[in-house]
Every structure is written in structure tokens, then in C-alpha cells.
Length: 347
Image (cartoon, one colour):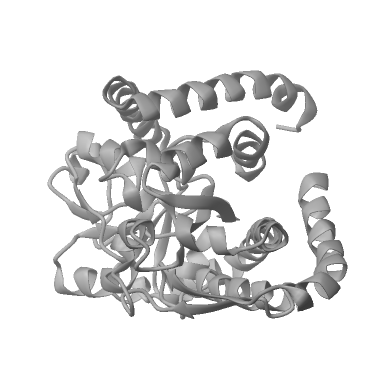
């Protein structure tokens, strides 16, 4: 927590320190694609605030304009668009790029993974960011971790799930490495974009969907078409957002402007995390008031999910050198971190 508070203080001090210099900086204009509709709880305001903060802290020299998903490029094509320079930058999640390389998922969220503090510790000070940059650079983009949220829900189901067999044959929207886990349990998964999930549930194109945490799911209206909401989000105990920038555009920024972007992203992580934690219980109460039943997965389900996840991790490490490199680094860090976690934290 001291680290998070320090980030906020650093951002405030930087804003004061760079203001005179920023006024003399050459103005750099950029178009930013947003991965999520602006009316999405938490994510929408975070995107908007990021653009505004970059402009304010830079004294107007970083002049970014944000665009809704699909306005310039479909959100699932941002990596290619930013890489070839047809889009300057995008605020998104690296887990969307697993079709390129499964290793991208390691820098978004990891099933049965750590909480926000431990995940950020690995990313920022355990080698995660360096590996993240290495992978993204292969696609001609620069990348900065630029947001984080704590646990998500496990998903919305149109029918109650009473046994593991009830999962077999379901069609479900699922993100990231967790999708591979669900596939092992007989679920057919697809990565439907945020703005299309409601209609897919309503029309019966899918039987279930996971998207995010309660405050975001509420704004997308899933409670209207699915009445069984499951927890905990074993697949995403912490999720990192990223800012990807074309290498050509990145070269236009001065060293001072680059530092501003990096520091504003640090502050964005703190604010998004704190706001997300403060908003969930109210959203959960509202969801319940709309006739939704909240369920917590029994132990036998979580055990089955974790067993399948361990199989997925081993399979992916054997297939992708980049995934193995990230997985080995992450696993070693978690093993060492456990010394501190077991002694320092209340259980």
C-alpha cells in the first residue's frame, strides 16, 4: 500500500515539476482507441480520465483524443493497428492478443493467480514488465501497464450450475487463460467484445458469459438476461490494463513526455484499483435487488478448475517459449514472495 500511495504522490509532484517545462514542449497529437464502451462502469471513466490527465499534466503538450471501440478500428485489432501505425495508441488488455501468442495473457491475468499487490510486485519489480515489453516490441509497439483491478466475478449463467456435468456443452464468453480451462471442462468459449455480450446472451447465441467485476457487469445489463451470478473470479484475481503506443508515435515524444505518460499510468493503476474496490458492494446489492442469485463455487468446482489450469499451464509452457519464459519468472517470484506473504500477512 505504501508503494501505491507513493505512486500517487509522485504523480502529483511530477505534475508540479513538469508544468513549466511542458509548456515549452512540442505538442504531440495522438488518437487513442478505447477497448471498452465509455458507458462501462469503472473502465469507461478510467479511459476518459487517462486522456484528460495526460493533457493536464503535460500542460497540453500531450494532446490525446479517445475513441470508442470500433470507431477507428475494431478493438480486437488494436495490436495490429498500433503496430503498423494506422492507430497511434490504445488503452486495452494484453489478453486480447492471445491469438498472436498465448504469452500475452500472462501480462493481463493469471488463473488462480496473486492479488493486485503481488501481481504488481512481479510486474514492476520482478521482471514482468521487461518480459511484457520484449513480447510487445516484436509487434512494433511500446507498452506500459496502465490500470489494474482486483477480483472479477466468475460469470453469468442463464441456468444454475449444480454439477460439473452442467458445464458440458455450454457456449460461454470467456477471456484469457481461463477460457482454456473452461474448454477442458467441456465448455465452448468465444471472446465476444464487451458491447456485444448482452445481445449474445439475450438471443441465446451464448449460454453464459464472464466479463468483469460487478460494477462493470451491472452497467452492461447482464442481470436482465441471466439470473445466476457466480463467484469468485478464480480466472482473474487481478487484471492489468495496458497502454500500447506505436513505436513511430513513441519516438515523437520527448523524454519528459514519456516520463509523464509512464507516471500518469502509475497513478491510473492506483485510482482504478481504489475506485473499483469501493464500488463493488453497492453494485452487488443492486444486482441482487434485480432478482439475481449470487452463487459461490463449491470447493469441488474450484478444485476441478485449478486441476485443469495446472494442465493448461504445463501445455502452454511446452508450446510457447515466450509463455514458458514468463511462467518460469512468475512462478519463481511467487515461490519467493510466499516467504513474505506467509509471515507478514494475516490469513
